[in-house]
Length: 344
Image (cartoon, rainbow, N blue to C red):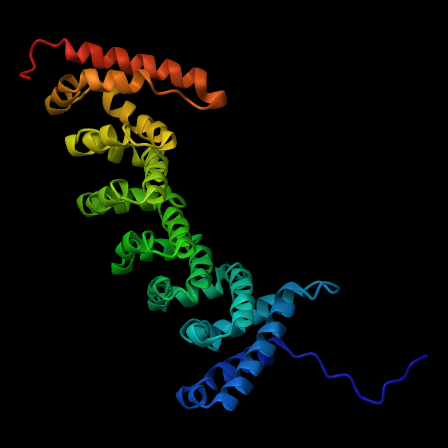
């Protein structure tokens, strides 16, 4: 039988954990950051407190988390303003601390005290935190951490709505083309979530900002970057075909400029891009209410279009349906090309 001469330390309460995190983050002030030894000590304290927070929220692998303590910690973190501190101190936190923070952020946002998500409510009252996280895509050291945290926020309609309507949203059109592949891919994942997670919100946004949005989106579809072209084309078909966006799609397929983009993408060197472009191009062609300008473009280019389509084939299990759709589109283009009323 073993004996210990040291009394085991009493586990901290949620209130104590929240206060310890707040105090250690506040210690990372301007003066501390410029003094190497003081910074190292302060960072150690932050990391230690983040580990304690993670264990309280998710358990330590042996002991499951206490539900009441988890809820109380989320409440205390909201009350103490810790969420603002962790976001603003992100750029100077170490790798381990950021990793623990991202994990804890996901758990904290899901905590519902009574009928409210207390941490989400805190962010709703401090919406500038979302702008800060978006702008952090410009800092490659913390971009992926911020991306993870943003996507957790986007799951909540009020937070997603704010980002969509904020000046920060247009920055995504720049971030998805950043030279760092990992950061650009992460930014695109967040961009995609913003445009697909909440159909009604997205529909309202696109209705109110139709011209501005699609002017910017056109640049992604015509980008010299293959990954950008492919991802943006695939995403376009996803959100345009969402039921709440049917009126947006009907407006989009009336515009000759967007038809020309799809026709150009049908000639892309990548077969994947050709097929994705076809799935949007076919909606222009199949539209029973094609404007005269669209009919003229299809008729003028019908020979080239038919050559492209005859040489285009589907992928695997989709082959049969693809070929059926392609035949219908070919017949419609041939029909339009024979219309006598068009001045060509």
